[in-house]
Amino acid sequence: MMELHILEHSLKVASIAKEGIQICTHGLIKLAFLPSKTRCKFFSLTETPEDYTIIVDEEGFKELPESEHLSVAEATWLALNVVSGGGSATNSQPIGVTKIAKSVIAPLADHNISVFMLSTYQTDFILVRERDLPMVMHTLSSEFTLLRVINGETVAANSLGVTNGFVKPKLVPRPIIHPLSSPSNMFCVTSLDPDTLPSVATLLMDVMFYSGGFPNNVLFTSASGELWKMVRIGGQPLGFDECGIVAQISEPLATADIPAYYISTFKFDHALVSDGFTTLHTLSVCMANCRGQF
View 1: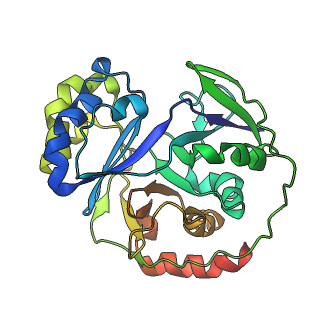
View 2 (view 1 turned 135 degrees about the horizontal axis):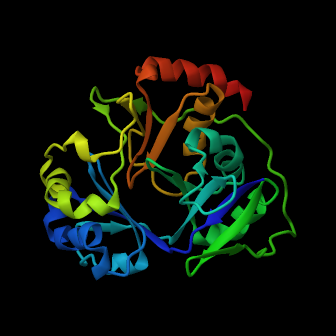
C-alpha cells in the first residue's frame, strides 16, 4: 500500500502584486537564500504574468511585511505527499501528478474537498485546508497508509473519528468548465542542488526579480533536455472554494498516460505537459475523449 505523508507545516498561500514585489524583496531573499537566518521549513515562489504566488509556513510568513500589495488566502493549508516503496518522502520514488490523479485528487474532489496543487522536479504536494484534514484522512484511509510528520519524525496518523454520517458520494462526470489557454513559449522543468545555492545566488536573484537567464550547467535536467508546454486553466481568477478543478484536468491526462506537472497559483492553475503533447487542440481532444470514462 502506498503511503500518504501529512507534513507538519501549517502553510499560508498568498499573492504579491507585481508592483509590490520591491516591498517584499528583502523577506524573499532571506527565505530563498538565507534559510539559516529563519525558522522557515517550506517555501515556494511562483511568478506568473499576473502576480507572484508564495506558499510558506507560518514561520516564513513572519518575514513578509504587511502591505496592501499582499493578499492572503483565509485558510491555513497542510501539504500531503504520496510516496511509494516506503521510507521518507525525500528518498522514495515520487508518484507524479498523473499517477495520483485517480487515487488522491479524484476522491477528494468527489467529497467536495478543494485542493491546491504544487508539482516540483522531485515530487508533488497536494495542499488541503487544515479544517478538511479529518475528511481527507477518512476519504483516503482505505487506499493509503496515513503517516504524519511530527518534529521531523514520521509516525502513524491517528484517526480523527470521521465516521458517523459518512455517505459515499455519487460519482458524476467532471466536464472542463474553465477555459484553457496556452502561451507559445516552452518551459524547462529543472532542479538545483542546495549545496550550490551560494555560488548561484546572484544569478537566481536575477531570474527571480529581473527576468534574467540561467546557465544550464548548474541545473539538474533530463538527458534529453525535454521541454514542456504550459496550459493555463481559467479565464477569471478561480478562487479557493471550487472543488474538482485539478481533477478535471489531471484525470483525462492520467487516463491517456500523458505525463504532467500541475501548479496552482493564487489566481489560476497551470498544467505542464511534455512537448510531445504541445498543442491545446491535442489536449482538448484528449479530455473530450476521456471525459465520459469517469
